[in-house]
Amino acid sequence: MIEPAAIQDHYPDEFAVCYGCGRLNAHGLHVRSVRDGDGSVAFFTPRPEHTAVPGFVYGGLLASLVDCHAIGTAAAAVERADGREVGDAPAPRFVTASLHVEFLAPTPLGPPLELRAHVVEVTARKSVIVVSVVAAGVTTATGRVVAVRMPESMTNRHPRPAP
Amino acid sequence: MIEPAAIQDHYPDEFAVCYGCGRLNAHGLHVRSVRDGDGSVAFFTPRPEHTAVPGFVYGGLLASLVDCHAIGTAAAAVERADGREVGDAPAPRFVTASLHVEFLAPTPLGPPLELRAHVVEVTARKSVIVVSVVAAGVTTATGRVVAVRMPESMTNRHPRPAP
Image (tube, rainbow over all chains, first blue to last red; front, side, top):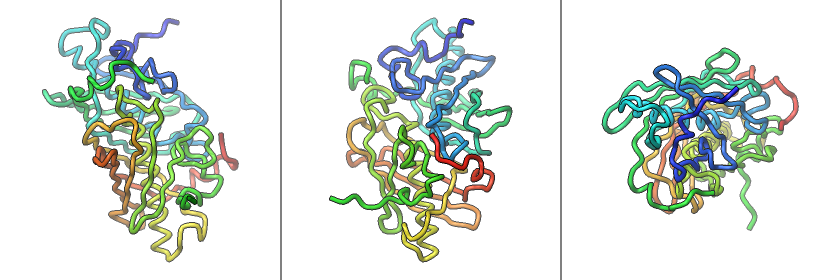
């Protein structure tokens, strides 16, 4: 099966080093968000070390997944609003202004997690994205992310991808 | 210099496997929260791979640090309220019900981060902890965590530490 292209596949190289979703970060999580209807979906199987207490997934990992998946979803929504398909041009890069995760139930460590996201608000200044985390058919966490376009101050610090 | 004992040093072994703060998680972040006045403080130097965009720290990492530092702070506050010092008994174990991080400014990747936390609300059901993240003298993020005592359903799943 050919894997569908992810939104993050189209981040420009210099912004594809994110620990959560950068394809060029050798140590990272490699979150991959794929457009699905009005939103996007991602799947992620936590590693054994991503534990909170034995048998359950670490909340900081879930927050990380929510964050990157939401940011990718925000980028895709802008492309769609501009009449482009993901991949037509380098994806616009958002950063996180606010990240809020509610942990509804312990997330079992083992099964792949499904993350679903959609944009609930767009203004010139920001996008608001909601995300649900589903494990073995149960929604165990929900997230709300406020994403803003990356400020100029973050774009010219180091010209090359790292690490 | 002898490092001061951290709150997490006193988590019972079976709950010391957290990716964020478990001393027994070989792959984890090893957040160490030390009591300081009414709250607690932690220092953490992000690794080169903990990047968002080049030169700046990944928000998911900051969320993870905020999470574990807040949970440790909640545990210490209960001990203090019960008239115990950290280390007198195994620390009570909290889990995160809600994690909210506001990213105020990009966090530079390089300098050690200082996290300061204190408890702002305690009820029988929950504790609310606020955290600030300071990099090179600038508060770059603030967090608010709702912590609850670990439910029974999370305590009897796997008797041994993992991974």
